[in-house]
Length: 426
Image 1: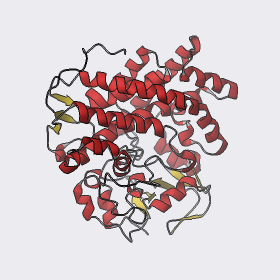
Image 2: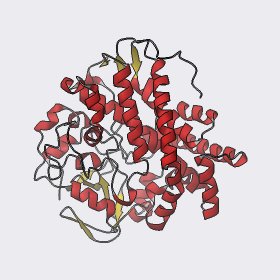
Image 3: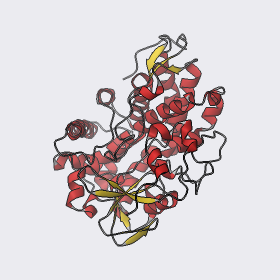
Image 4: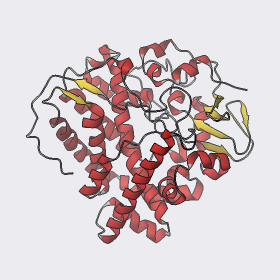
């Protein structure tokens, strides 16, 4: 039975994967698809080879719906009562075929060219405002004081959230990776279940508010199109959920992991403009969305040299696929001048991230603003002591791992605000 090769096992730890020590790791000849043990004693297939991951993202022999994996997978993935679960999980992310196309078409206009031009202006303004609030202090937590509120405010303003709903989103905990394989009743599952219920309530209240007072905004448009297409409440709230969380979470994780990489390579920070210009390489190297939710084989199929049976689940490790030496030269070296083609930072195929252009815009804006506005930026504790999101290393027990830091305390040279710090609109 295939198991992870020694180099692959090392790179599963994001701390090593993002460090210069990764350059010494060689995964040539290691299995591109292997089996990982789960806490209940069962196993799941994991694809880490670029070709295998790319194939599984497009092959019709793999499907997303949980029912394909049977009762065990339903137990793993259902943290809450059916109504709450259905209000979160029934987005395009967990659909295939015609259902996926309908839900993707429902969401697509919210991220059209005109909306993105609006988002660019909002992002620049909100980045400056958020940094004005901290630049004079010389200290900040870049997660809680900048990246998270910046991204949330840009995204909710873009979609047309009323201010009170943006405030509710900001009061929620950051959306953590799902502890899919943790035991029922465990603290992690209880925590995640409570967070899912709070998010479900917020989205339900938002839809009700927009039905009472619709406007010329993406949320109102999504509701109207869903009604015309005969979609139900859970499909609407699930679409709003994925448009929200999939837009703001990767931005925070990209910023924290990029700085983690750059601080270990001071020569790359000597020219902040080069770091911003190397955005595509930073996205490949950090791969903020590291692991996908499982896909299920619907027929006997071969993947990366192994045979999968119907009902077998495969987890796709995008971050390690982006380190495949068969696809990238010196894949574990951060080269800001590298021309990046066919990476999987935003997946591939029908499920290629709908919000890629928005995510790239926000990642670039956040990184450029921080490097420009906070001279002398350094972490206030050793890099090895920083606290990471669950699932960033150790046994495979969390999925949808975004491979980012929980917090990032920093110091910098105090700077006067560029404009008088005023209360944010939300």
